[in-house]
Length: 136
Image (cartoon, rainbow, N blue to C red; front, side, top):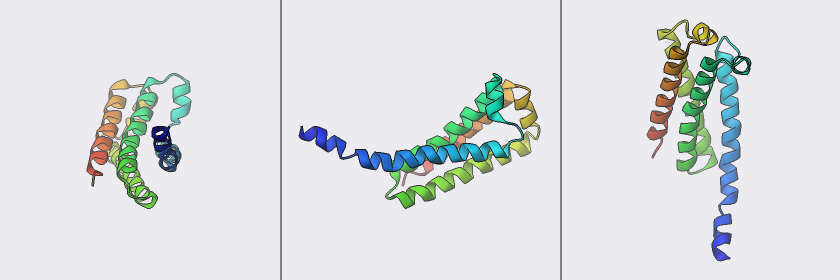
């Protein structure tokens, strides 16, 4: 019985980080979709695999550092600071990628998988490096 009580003692801290993390990912994805010239959600509903790949890659690329920030944060304020840094890094990554692939939005809209996989891969790679760099 004591073991269960000790385990349940972590429920509140779990929710203190989990709920904001989910909300933050949703806000990030909203901002990301506003940066693109196409509607990811509509394209995914139309079965555009390229848009889905980019959308999921962006989500994973952002969720990785958010998970690291939650695991390493010493407070909710610390968590919030690292979340903002992670968001900026991911959004800047997308803008830099667009400089090298200026027609990426059109290619995703057309359903081109190769370009979408590369963008998603870059988002996940940067997210992994971002997350690893947050271990302090």
